[in-house]
Image (cartoon, rainbow, N blue to C red; front, side, top):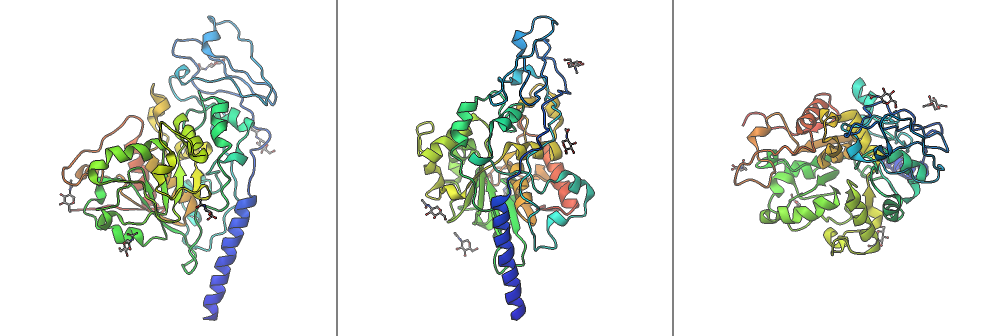
Amino acid sequence: MANHKVRLLLLLLVILLSIIFFIISEESLPENISWTAFSGYNRSRDGHLLNIGKLWGKTKVLIPSNNIKGNSVIRPQTTPAENPISLLFKKNFHKIPQWDFEDIYHQDAPPSLTTCPQSLRNSKDEDFQKAFLPNIRVFMHKDNFNIKDWNRLSHFNNPFGFMEMKYDDVLDAVKLIPKPTEPLLLPKPGGDGCVHCAVVGTGGILNGSKMGAEIDAHDYVFRVNGAAIKGYEEDVGNKTSVYVHTSFSITQSLYILKKYGYQSAPHDKGIKYVLIPEGMRDFQWLKALFKEGNYQNTNPRNYYSGQYNESRYYVLHQDFMRYVRNRFLKSDNLNKGFWDIVRPTNGAFAVFLALHSCDTVSAYGFMTEDYRKYSNYYVERHHKTNVIFYANHDYILEKNLWTSLHVRKILKLFMRTGS
Ligand SMILES: *[C@@H]1O[C@H](CO)[C@@H](O)[C@H](O)[C@H]1NC(C)=O
Ligand SMILES: *[C@@H]1O[C@H](CO)[C@@H](O)[C@H](O)[C@H]1NC(C)=O
Ligand SMILES: *[C@@H]1O[C@H](CO)[C@@H](O)[C@H](O)[C@H]1NC(C)=O
Ligand SMILES: *[C@@H]1O[C@H](CO)[C@@H](O)[C@H](O)[C@H]1NC(C)=O
Ligand SMILES: *[C@@H]1O[C@H](CO)[C@@H](O)[C@H](O)[C@H]1NC(C)=O
């Protein structure tokens, strides 16, 4: 009995300390970061040389290809550091540009105190430990955004940065994003000191799985995109703690899944919403959401069924998304002409959000080796459909990553062997 009380007190202390650390844990990038070399392929599509040079403190060089005549020497255009750099254009690169600061990210919180011995953070897997950044900055908000970051991140295409976007347009939205006051998730009092999470994808493997009760038994359940629940509870559960979406997925799912009975995004009491800012429209969405304004003639708040509360609303950081891509999901397609649309799926971002917010993660409804046996989506239960491979995602790479993380015991991937 006394022992139990001590454990409870310790847990509460850990929760309190986590919150305090979270609040005071803003770090900035090292001062000596400079956008120096561009070590990749640097010819624009029309064959002109692109000179993307140095940004040492107060100067920067950036020459749009249409200023370039033949092979003449290019005079650097300089701007004071406090101004946004001029726009870079995706069409000027026929594969992903490689900057020497490509793999440099903001990192925030000191290692979070975990009372969980089996936390994935304690994994002995060397490859994982090398790639995993426990303190990567996960969320963006009005207080961790500045012009220096803008200039750094403007070298990356969306959703990894702001290439082609206008500073004022993005700032208008970002200055409204409140700084989160607590970590996304905390250990449940009375639990075992671990944060146990389930991430539920939309894959056909869930149809007929009867995994609902097992999913709901986790401390927290993440869902993503068209997360149909009503009528599918037995297979997918009925609880949602974190809903990960884009402005596109939350609005379009209503149309696409209407015939499957989908009526609204998850809206459990106290649910946390996480937006993936995949493009300019998401910043417009955020602006309308926070100001209660209009986005394409609708009020974004209506899509959250009364559960919108800015204290529970989080927006993924560009560094986090780039880190996920660079270190875990670097598709060969990034070297192809359509590199600028290639990015991890929203489901993949949700899994990584869980890996950074939880001690244990189980993934349900994600692609497995035997994906051909199942429909594309679990809602497609009456007619078997095939998985659709859109060019913007590398599904096979993601499937292999889930399998590999499962084998290395970083997460538990739901699979159905046999049947
Ligand atoms: C920046 O400075 C840190 C510490 O002073 C050093 O370890 C690091 O190598 C430097 N990075 C670059 C890119 O110069
Ligand atoms: C990129 O341009 C620089 C000069 O601006 C040149 O030295 C380098 O060889 C070029 N790299 C490629 C891959 O074309
Ligand atoms: C979810 O399902 C459980 C039973 O599995 C039930 O007790 C609970 O009331 C359901 N919750 C909601 C919000 O429907
Ligand atoms: C939003 O959440 C906060 C903290 O839980 C609460 O104090 C506030 O009343 C909520 N606002 C609305 C509009 O529900
Ligand atoms: C979905 O699951 C049900 C129950 O197991 C099964 O009868 C049906 O054939 C499945 N649908 C597809 C498309 O696999």
